[in-house]
Image 1: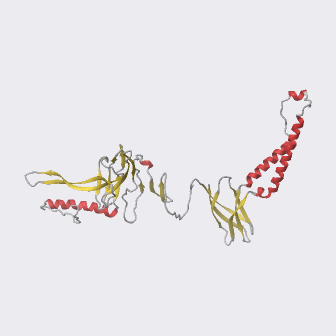
Image 2 (image 1 turned 180 degrees about the vertical axis):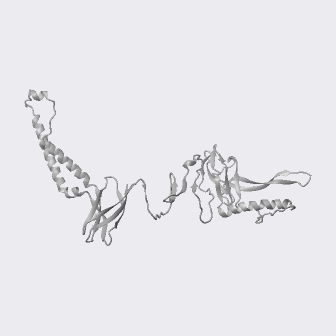
Image 3 (image 1 turned 90 degrees about the vertical axis):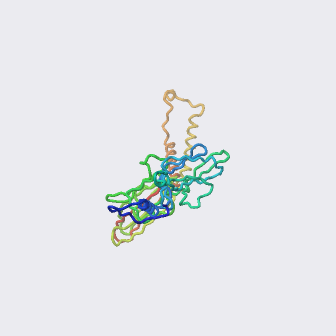
Length: 383
């Protein structure tokens, strides 16, 4: 029955005499139609379930599910199956599932003796070698053993192959990806179409891996995180006077870096502009006050020495302390010299820190003899 195909349906009419071959042809037509669909619209592989789990030290269980082989035959496992692997002493085994058809339900009566049913069953086997015909013996898992401990150490699912669609466009409203051993369907990865004013595609996934190049055509919106980087998107307009330029600067934090994707487009017709980024070491104060820093450092050291000398003179032996000073709390208002010293010290510290920062300056030049309005957009990625 498996070797025959039928593309003809029975055409019944009143008074027709039917025999066993007519009913066999009726069944053959439907069986062939189903297998032709599976073979031509899907690849062979695992359609659902058939998950392999360790059971005990050397056995495995296979859950309910279905596979399709290279001839389009449906291989159905409708009950949990436990496989005893203890007879094998190999370090690795291929666990496979395949289709088997046999006649069942033998009946013996007054007439002919015959089987009344044909059963399409599944056969689950294991072998040390990979199957010769992968489409006929479908791999469920590769089992790895630790023979020193005489136990099953791991279940490798890399060579499992799932059923795929064949052909051109596929029209669906949504696709849900079921995960092995996960019961909560609300957390399954999902791709669905979105309607409304801005129709598109929505992808819901806790973790998505993209291998290869990514080409994006269109507008990238929202917040994007790249390897721990946060992003900021901004846009606006500005006016630049005739034959002049405008600048926007950003100071980079000490331990992070900024990256910019920028565009500046003139809105005013017949205008000529030029724009670009400049990177400067330190801000304007630290660039022009390097000598000031050196001077302030020397001044601070000198003032500190003077304050130290004043304190040491005040506390010399033989100095008479008045009764009034004994009664008052020992709280002194810093002298003008000490206050100046603290101010100098703060300036030196501030300039020293700012000197190590970077300044990014976006410079837009207007070469026209008229005022020009420009639109600018930038996408900032902060490490």
